[in-house]
Length: 246
Image (tube, rainbow, N blue to C red):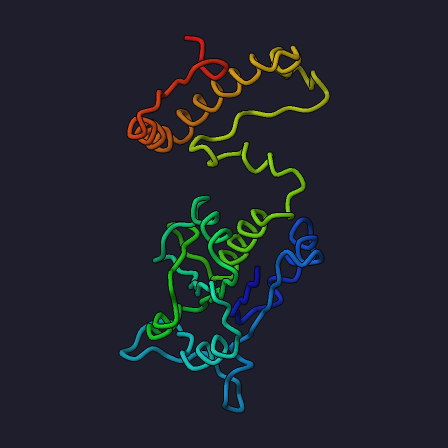
């Protein structure tokens, strides 16, 4: 998959692109990331990419011309989506990341800064995406989250595909607690069921823990999950091994 990121601060991405699974994905050419600085597409001698807003107001706005020029300089793959990282966009979540990883070959990501971008930039955009209901100094951090979340879903990035299926949000519930050695750390012991070798009991315990954790931490997710099960005509507590013991 090809990622083209339009940003005034390309150096922000240096560490992300050279570390961990993302660096491996780039080395294996599972993903390709290109960074474009709008300043490189300006035509004035000062390379001015921002200006004061019409009508007055605090702060500066990114100008439309450099952003349009940057995006229009790119090749256009058949399945391309142009995304503007904006607090006014749809909230980033796992279904969105899966949609982008599955349905597109090229993502063009525009990072705003200062007070945002000239409204006319939105004529370029297919969708706006937000990291959440809060404000950051620019779109670079949300763009990194989007990039990381999509690339890890691409075939070949994560060694064990099964690990992607058994994690929070994949089945509508939060993930269950997990433990590794030692079995007893400062008096906190690994639950006996995980040491039992009884895979049916372990599956049942994990499912119970998913329900409990989701109810405690994200009751909204649990309610949505229950509603979806009901709409599909499925039981909230399916047959063993996943039926909780009440």
